[in-house]
Length: 67
Image 1 (cartoon, rainbow, N blue to C red):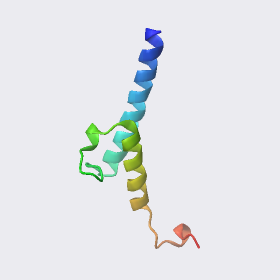
Image 2 (cartoon, rainbow, N blue to C red):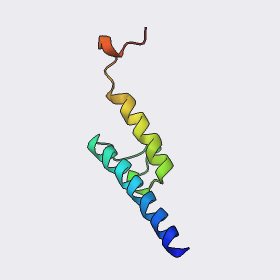
Image 3 (cartoon, helix red, strand yellow):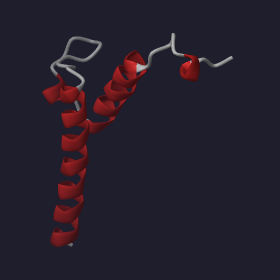
């Protein structure tokens, strides 16, 4: 049981590190609430990544217009 738990924890840490790395690539250092991103949990990091991704979309481009 201990090995399975360790494997899951390792996988969760890898996911968190991936999202954290993407946020750093997008030059995000703090959350919308002002906390450093290194202190956020995985779900909060995913939320911040979605917000950062929306900011990267060029709305003036014809390919990105919704209608």
